[in-house]
Each structure stands twice: as structure tokens, then as C-alpha cells.
Length: 127
Image (cartoon, rainbow, N blue to C red; front, side, top):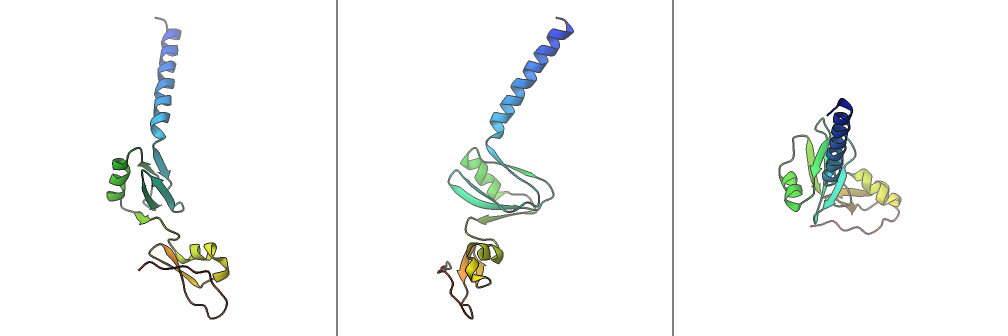
């Protein structure tokens, strides 16, 4: 076998490996370091991931066990919360702009705080 044939075979093998990695990579989420909170709703399990650990995360979600294992054993610097409307009061102001500061974030849900004046949409806090 000459050098040209060997290079062609190696290039073909590299292409196959690259394509296989792309197929496998479709079953994960990438959560960038210090990015906005990412909501991941996979395999019937919805969680919000806040990554502040100093590096990007590749979170496996191909199966429930992979995804649930990450939720149970996440690295230091990561905060996992339940899916809901909010993780801070500023998000409530975006969701309910007429309320301004009359909403608060409690257990990941926007809750009505009685304003001094004006009206606010009805939002119920969980008990």
C-alpha cells in the first residue's frame, strides 16, 4: 500500500469516527460556564441548571438514568432547581411587567405582593 492509499483510508476512518461522535453527542446538553440558567426538560424530568463551576458542562440526557444521575451528583459550583417561572424576582418583573416590584420569587414561582397602588395579575404561591 502506498502513502496516498494510506492517507485516504485514514481520512475515511476519521470521517466515520467524527460522524459517530456527532450521533452520540446529540444526547447531551451543553451548559456554558456562567451562562444564563438553562432549563432542561428531558426523559420526563425538568430541572434548571445554573453553571458557575469554571468550565462548560456536557450533561448526558440520552436515558432517564443518565440525566437523573447528573441531577443527583452534579459538580461543585452548579445549582439545580425545579422548573418553574423564576429563580429571582427580576424574572417576575419580566413575566408580569405591570407589577414592577410587586412580585417576588418564592420556591421558583412568581408570587403576588400587594402593591401600594395599581393592580397585579393573580399568581398563587405554593404552600
